Amino acid sequence: MAFPTAVNDQITDAVTQTNVKVLGDAPAMAMGAIYQSLAHSTGILYQNATSAQQQLAISAQAATNQGVIQLYSVDTMAGAVATSKVSQSDVPDTMLALLTALKATRS
Image (cartoon, rainbow, N blue to C red; front, side, top):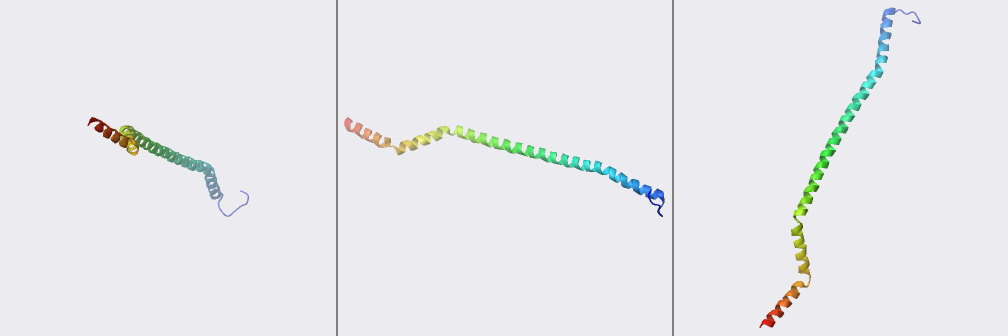
């Protein structure tokens, strides 16, 4: 000790050693806190990755379902488009004129 005091030397040494122990334990406690934070962050990272994979699988299944629906409806869509084109063209009028001409030549 540098200066003599009224406090017993053993008490002063015990307090000093306790303070040194606290300072010595500080780096280990800090590293423990860092490792715990790292483990928590990694856990959240894996949870987010799993959630993203689940959402992607749902989106892929929905897209596949829409593709199958479109494949099954190709014939009806093609028929509807063809009917629409025929009804908008002159084909019905031309066919009616042909039928009238055929009836006229029969009689």
